[in-house]
Image (cartoon, rainbow, N blue to C red; front, side):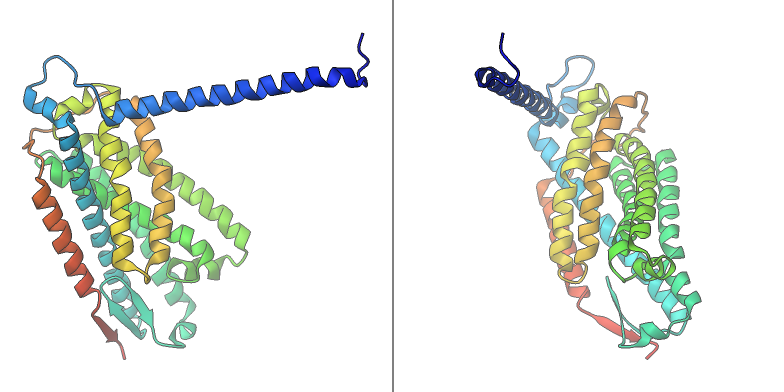
Length: 331
């Protein structure tokens, strides 16, 4: 009988540990292969047989899915630009009413040296706190109204969906950015709460609630935006639609914004990039619990590559040119 301290028992223990390690890694490899297989089924779905027409089934081809993804990129980018221009205009109007000197451009607001330190506390809280909560509420209101609209096309519904999501994500990005950066929402956030870890805790709670709400709204709105009912026929096809339209399209959308804004709004892009990978998987996962979605009749036509790329290029160039102009207000 081997003594526990006997060296002859060590090879046996070492062999057992190695077998456990090999078994653990083999199990992880099987899990990875399974998830990759599931991902492949979602990205390249099997066309179901049944009551659907050939025109509907054509939407499941790679070419059609890729065009749908590109159109969603266009909607993502256009919606983000609209939200940023809108909030920038609101802040500029509030600054103007309060007699604060600033330089206004399409996407950014900058201040003359020293002016920011002469603000009254009420101005600081009004301009850099309440509007951001208003954006979230406006996004929630727009999401609710979009879900109930009947007489709009799926293309317009998809654009309105992205606008409502961007309004709410803009609030979350501002809260996250405000923890670290003394700018915009961070001016009020860091003025009210000076302790970094307390700001981090509060921001985490706010963002967790906001992500939960956005996920609930987004999964319903995206599924409501399908051009044909075939995407709602099975759980796999619902995930196919969400992965192509939301999961893949946000990456090129953020890259377009990065190249448009660099280096002026890099924090905004980074904060948004950190939030969307949290929301999108939750949206795709939640599609399994959505069973009854009714979509209104509309044109099923998917925009062509030429149309999508042309509009994207024109929009990007126009915004790039306009962003170079600025005005000094209340000088």
